[in-house]
Amino acid sequence: MQNMTLVMGLGQTGLSIARYLHAHHMPFAVFDTRETPPGEALLRQLYPEAPLYLKTYPSNVCDNVSRLICSPGVSLDLALIHEARLRNIPIEGDIDCLAREVGAPMVAITGTNGKSTVTYLLGEMAQAAGMKTAVAGNIGAPVLEVLLDEPDGFDVWVLELSSFQLELTSRLCPTAATVLNISPDHLDRHHSIQAYRAAKQRVYQGAQTCVFNRDDVQTKPDLNVLEDDAVLISYGSDEPASPNDWGLRYDAHHELCLARGEICMVPVKAISMKGRHNWMNALATCALAEVLAIPIDICVSVLKTFSGLPHRCQNVRVLDDVTWINDSKGTNVGATESAITGIGSSTTGKLVLIAGGQGKGGDFQALRQPVSTYVRHVVLIGEDAKLLDDALSDVVHIHHAASLQDAVKQAQLCAKAGDVVLLSPACASFDMFDNFNHRGDVFTALVNAL
Image (spheres, rainbow, N blue to C red):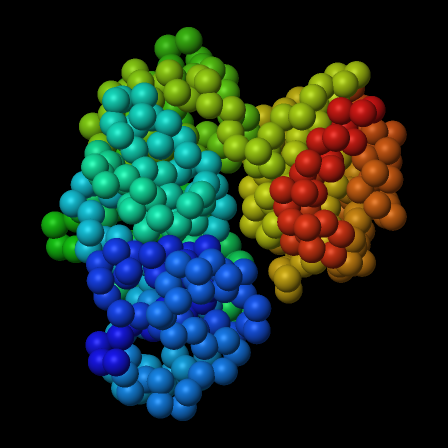
């Protein structure tokens, strides 16, 4: 069969790609490296005529293939992908398929940390402004599933994009794009921080407006990805120097505010999301909302009510004047560093940090400065507790716990009135839990039972 598309990966995204190709009457085959991928039964039921290759594939499979569409989780080091490249067969992801279909404004959001919060927050602002809004990408349903389920289309697409998705994206050309921050992550896939950053930078390709974080020089668009007529807008923790930039500024009443240029928009104490890092998320979102012509009063109204996403610096409860915060989504060193600094700089007491799990090769030395500044005690759990101990034991009191339940008990004993107990593990959860959601749910239940 000539001009066939080969779908790589048979999970949720792979199934959505198959559904999209079928709807467009495009012949396809599917390959997955696993013997029993999760989408096998449904694919065979819906598209029994589609060739399906599991674990192995015919040696001449590329003879009949005109392009590969890869799920984000598929390693680009596979021999089949190398062969496709040698034959100059196009390789893309589902985001490119979406970009060809959509004429509505599209906002593309990436970064190591905070991208889900900014994506959902912008989606809330757009909906509050009366826009029919698709919030998709690296969160929720795959983009092609969202596209097919809404034939009447959307007024705006708000996309969270991972480095895995961006690696496969050739030219998204969004209305606005942002890289929120860059810190080492997924180096097992990208092999170097330079390659990881290069993947993130692809979000700016063809963008009409680029929003970057002036506190993190790595987020500024590189010249090789920047359009000549692209508008650049920055945000940061200092006062904005330009009327179009965003930052923090004191108003006439000496209240610290989110500001655009010299204009103060809302005091940070009125924002429902807590922590300085969430002020940065709010600034980035407001800058993107302005590109979509969302009125600032709507943005402010949403900021006053949007309390953040589960497991991302989520307030659990206050007990005996100690605040307990669930940041189980802090699965890498950069996320935990941001949480410690953001919460520590905006609280009167000290932090008691619960950390540990599978470190994914992260450099825990980067936690030394924020821990020494803001943390009174660290309670360690999980597989890489010793590595965290080695990195931090000379700057903070260390305690070891046999379980998360034990860690919560020890943290309660360590905390003083005015302190914050923060679960922000800087590690993956799979040594002890199903995923970060499971870890956060267990923590929340344990805290509520105190």
